[in-house]
Image 1 (cartoon, rainbow, N blue to C red):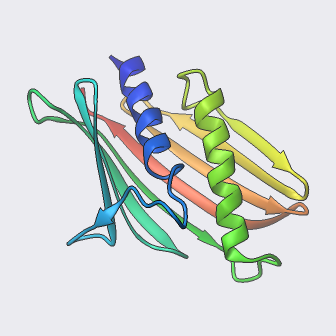
Image 2: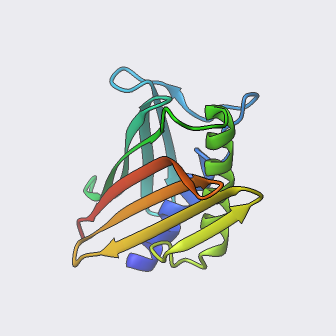
Length: 158
């Protein structure tokens, strides 16, 4: 069950956040958040809602189609620091690239620490697993200086 849930999270994230570009936006305008995304994946419905750009905040939800039961909920926030020496768009482009690489390379073990480096940029995600959930802290560095953070907390409700 947890393996299928992780695969659903991976596929959902790859389908929305990673695919989003200036030319293509899989999200729709939302009444509560700025944007929302919904996709049926196997026996689940994956949803992602977020608002803002810098900082941003959102929630990701997975619902069992048959029972309408929420089995995963993950709140997240992120921001680029004011002292960042490069453009915010460049930081978020790198964040998207690193997260895509993590999602593709994790081999269905999404909650495993991951590091990715490209030129002067470094992405480092650390996961702390609990009995029913996970805490993720991601730091982005430019030339060894912290420039951005992404923090998420997910709860499994099976």
